[in-house]
Length: 202
Ligand SMILES: Cc1cc2nc3c(=O)[nH]c(=O)nc-3n(C[C@H](O)[C@H](O)[C@H](O)COP(=O)(O)O)c2cc1C
Image 1 (cartoon, rainbow, N blue to C red):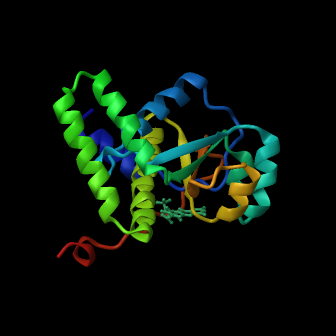
Image 2 (cartoon, rainbow, N blue to C red):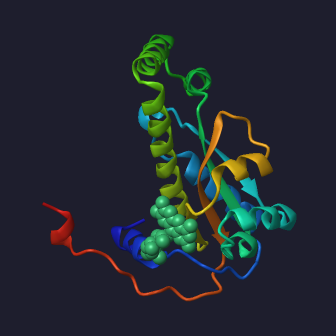
Image 3 (cartoon, rainbow, N blue to C red):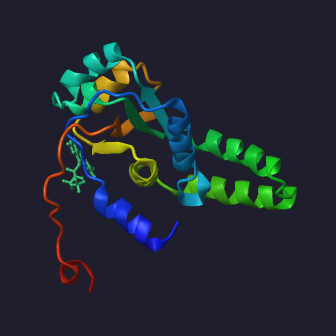
């Protein structure tokens, strides 16, 4: 892919307010999941779990606890990006995957030590924030990845996290952090409003 194409993706995507209800083909969905899987993360912890919701009944239940935003019920799939606070378990899982790709044991051990030391030294509150920051990178990858596949999306923070956890019966270590509604737009993009370069870069 050349830079121009990525520019079109960045400039062309927008936060869809209403989808047409058409389903995303399974193959495309799996392709998008792979892109999300490859999002970068601190110490490669990949501290996210993503609940995929496609059924109308669950979406209806979630609507009133999502500020009644129409994306919830009109989208094809709703991704609930959860921060996975079981970080120690995550290190063990990553170590298994390192072995599978042929990384030698010495380097795996070094990684595990570094990752566990990090967990010891970071305060629980900082750890929570850190984990959720990582989730936003997975979300950004989802937005741009979707656009690259011709899928429209909306990142959404307007929802009640505790109610989501209840309705979706999430275990306590999974914290609903952000939503990504996916599908095909049935609205038009609003005018893009962005601060000028000189306001941002100094
Ligand atoms: C953290 C975050 C929370 C957001 N929450 C919502 C939301 O609940 N509903 C919505 O329609 N858009 C939501 N958005 C989308 C933003 O409003 C949108 O990205 C911004 O206005 C810029 O517009 P654009 O994405 O169309 O370029 C959210 C975006 C972010 C990054």
